Length: 130
Figure 1 (cartoon, rainbow, N blue to C red):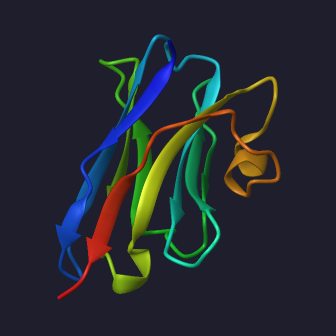
Figure 2: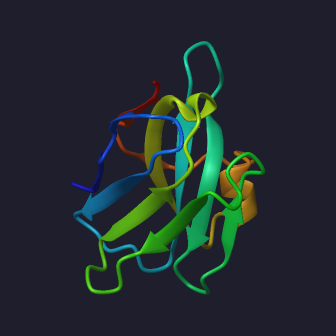
């Protein structure tokens, strides 16, 4: 059964860094748009960053541009990451990874949630606090 599992969340001080991982089982990531989303308490889920595995196109939400980096582990075809630097309390949220076939969406549509991704992980908590 296809599954996405996030890891790497935790508590970090403002200005600190974390790297989230998303591991896929039951399928490879080839020909998928993959992405990270987050949901803070009382807020709607929002796209953070997305990547097309077919051509490398990326998308970043304005609030994280220049601080977060999405990448795919080329040695492990079923894992991708979100490197988060210079974290601030506004980044506190549950972070989810997701995927959708490239034939069904674009990176931008997936990340802006114009088209909701089909497959999601269970989420990992990121808390930024002093």
